[in-house]
Image 1 (cartoon, rainbow, N blue to C red):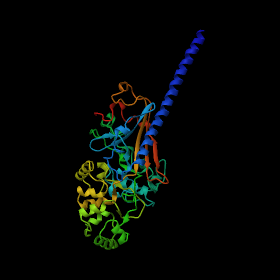
Image 2: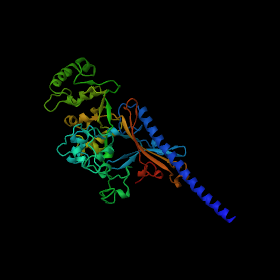
Image 3: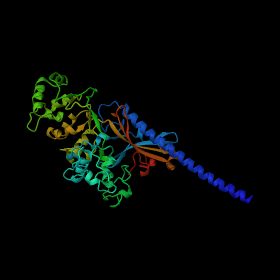
Length: 439
């Protein structure tokens, strides 16, 4: 009987362990499905968004705690969050606009050089990695360099497929790619502000410096259509009647026909004149013509790499030619003021001079079609909203954290073009702090 009793206790102990393990596995799968529910909600939000231009004032996707923070579902809740890295580091509850980032595949040298901690050697290596030839630039690197590494590999000589691919490029290190935000949650943790120069490295300045992963993309692309979805009129190739139907007057059309024979227009902002060319449109007339966004400078259906000037953070705005710290702050103030029309680049003339706009106009848009989704699913009592007092004493259980990119312009159908499990980085926020933590 004693032996049987001991065997029974041993069996019960084993069963308790098995029950705990199976319960943990089940909770993990529930958390995974909750995270996928967050991604599904984000995709549906993008697909159902009928706004003809995107800005940070849009609560549909940019910041809506009611729709994206700790949404109860089944045995737990899911969240969609967006880290920000401007002067006041915070976390918003919504989607992350890929068009607000520098596109590694299209950005010219002058823009890449203005990214944080960038050098000429690294920029040349990036350009060599993405170009089709095998000839290294002045301080770049091709296969002749990478073949000498351990293990050896070839220079890709093709466009980047992910931002993480930068780690293959000479000079790119994990600290440069991910910055001080080791767990990529947009919050300054204690180990990210202790002066440690090893890993994760930081400078103990009380500010969370972002890496290239948060400021760059490879997916951004704009549709070359007007506000109604019709193909834009190419001022470099359109006939006189087509230009008139796009809102231009006959004298303006005749000037365009003459000027484009000598040199093509790089952007519609060149209609304002400058650099030796006469002004075809006044500032006021330019704003009038751009209503409806009917004019363009190319015939392509998609234009990759354009930066949404309505949503780009300050670090990215400063990469554009002609943008200073003062101008960036003015742009950010104007675009967040309720009631301002941000549907086309005409609004920028309320902040900058025409000559400044012309410098960065070829690189910008006011629309977004690709979004990065930071999703979390967790099992446990949903966030305490003041009604469920018990929730304040319970901690979250199993969780899963994912990041994905949804491309509304993907062919043949809109789809996820990137996905990665980031659970190993840890829970990015504390549900008990609520959507607006004091710290």
